[in-house]
Amino acid sequence: MAPLLALEDVRAGYGPIEVLKGISLEVNEGEIVTLIGANGAGKTTTLMCVSGILRARSGRIVFRGQEIHGLPPDLIVRLGLSQSPEGRKIFPRLTVLENLEMGAFTRDDPAGVAQDLGRAFELFPILKERRSQPGGTLSGGEQQMLAVARALMSRPKLLLLDEPSLGLAPMICIRIFDVLRDLNKQGMTVLVVEQNARAALKLAHRGYVMETGAIVMTDRAAALLDDPKIKDAYLGE
Image (cartoon, rainbow, N blue to C red):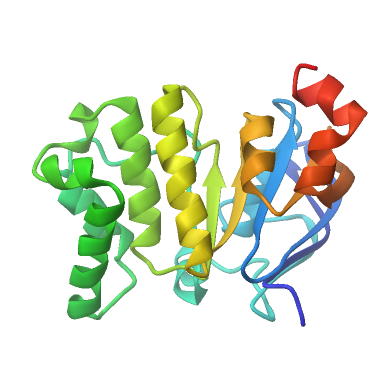
C-alpha cells in the first residue's frame, strides 16, 4: 500500500540559504510519525513545505497519491491535510468559537461543522467554557488546545503538529498528547514535530531524526528511544 504522505529528495530554503538538503520520509495511514532534531535542523521547514506555505525548490511531495508540490495551501487543506503551527498562531481578536469556525472555512456542510464543534468541545472541555472569549485572552495551554482543535475542524486525513508542547506546563502537555493518542486510535494519521523527544517517541509508532537539513536516522520509535546515540543527543542520558 502506498504511503499517505511521501517526501522524495525535497530541497527547500529561504533566499540563498538551503535548509532542506534532499530529505525523504513517509507517513503511512493510521500512523503517528515524529520528526525530532535540534533547533534549526529543518523540522518546521519540512512541515511548511508539506502544507504549501513554503514551496520546495526540488523533489516530490505526494499526498494521497497526488503530487501537491506547488499547490496553494487552501487546496492542500481541501485535499485532507491540516496543520497546527508552531507558536499556535490563533486569531487573538476572534472568539474561541470563531477561531474554530475558521478551521472549517473550506467546508460547506453546516451540520457536519456543528457536529465537529461538539467534538472539539468534548476533546477540550475548557474551550466550551471559553467559547465566547477572544482567543488572545486564553492561557498558553488553552491556546494550544484551540490550535489543535481548529486544525481538526477541516476533518483532515493527516494532521501536522509543530511543537505542540512548547512552553506548556507538564499537565497540559499530557492532556494534549492523550488527545492525540485517542485521535490516532480513531484512525487519525499524525506527523508531529516535537522538541520533547522523549514524549514524542513514546507517542509515535516511528521516528525520523533530522540534523542540519538531512534525515540521518529512522526507525521504530521504541528502537530510537533505546538507541545510545539518541539518548545522548536528545534524551539527556
